[in-house]
Amino acid sequence: DTAVSQTPKYLVTQMGNDKSIKCEQNLGHDTMYWYKQDSKKFLKIMFSYNNKELIINETVPNRFSPKSPDKAHLNLHINSLELGDSAVYFCASSLGTWNSYGYTFGSGTRLTVV
Amino acid sequence: AQTVTQSQPEMSVQEAETVTLSCTYDTSENNYYLFWYKQPPSRQMILVIRQEAYKQQNATENRFSVNFQKAAKSFSLKISDSQLGDTAMYFCACQSNTGNQFYFGTGTSLTVIP
Image (cartoon, rainbow over all chains, first blue to last red; front, side, top):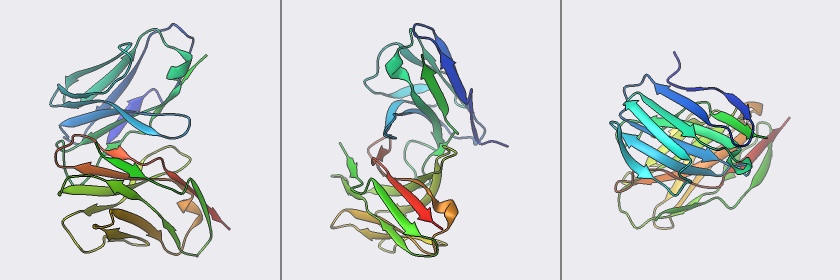
């Protein structure tokens, strides 16, 4: 069983489109995250939810909107996609907001905007 | 804010040899966790090893060990008996007990040469 699953794994879309990436975890964790990894492999946090409550909302364009219907799911919706949005997006989860076990990551979604 | 610095963008090592990846961090907190994650070409982020700052003993996981120097804020990763499967990007990360997120370094790309 996959612990943190993201769909889709690959997404190629045209500029201006709206797309969503879904994330689900079956670990019983209560905190979930979205990270963006750029072309230089730098990992930057975008959002974090703890028990469906938004606790981290970094400076990202408001075209990006996270949604957490329950603590096992955290989806990312992106409006009006731009070329600069091309990146790998990682979902992750953890037990609480601070623990020694770290994050469990999904396998990432490679988004390519053309 | 915390910062994590990995000063070696790329490294290589002969198979079966030992290699050390450097990481320094900056935090004003007394209590924090440190992690090394591995990202092979498959893109999956895999936890390699973790260290609790209040523990003086260096963490070890099979061929992976750390040299944790708290006063110097240094957290290097040693890989012994390097294997081809160790070829990957390695990220150092820090999380304090007052933060809800990890701070990642910029990564070190390690190539194991047969």
